[in-house]
Length: 126
Image 1 (cartoon, rainbow, N blue to C red):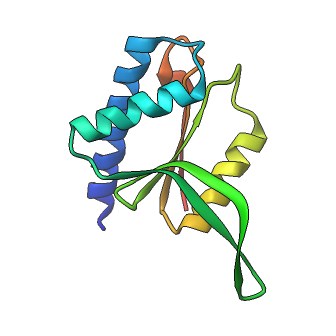
Image 2 (cartoon, one colour):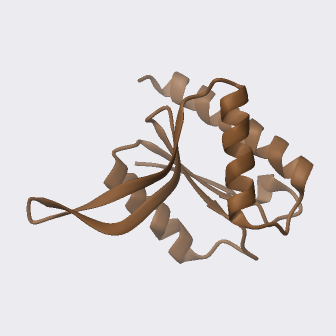
């Protein structure tokens, strides 16, 4: 996977997330944004997985500890969705941890509870 392709994919993901945010606005449950964003991926024929189990690697074993990424797009970009007043350091740490667990190189933290979604986007590269 080239960085150019990854950048184009993240740009497309952000564009679709902005479309969802424009239509719904802030103040809804995270699950509503997740479902609508998945609908946009389906409509645009972008492969994704929803509520992806993240196994913890510990001492050579993979353990199921209940961690789940909201969405993984094309097995390349991990999305962690929020609908919170503001992004906290713990949210960013969660994204970094999920990136490590998933093997994805790029992660997007999207907080839909903002006046403009642009304010609620954090992009991280592993």
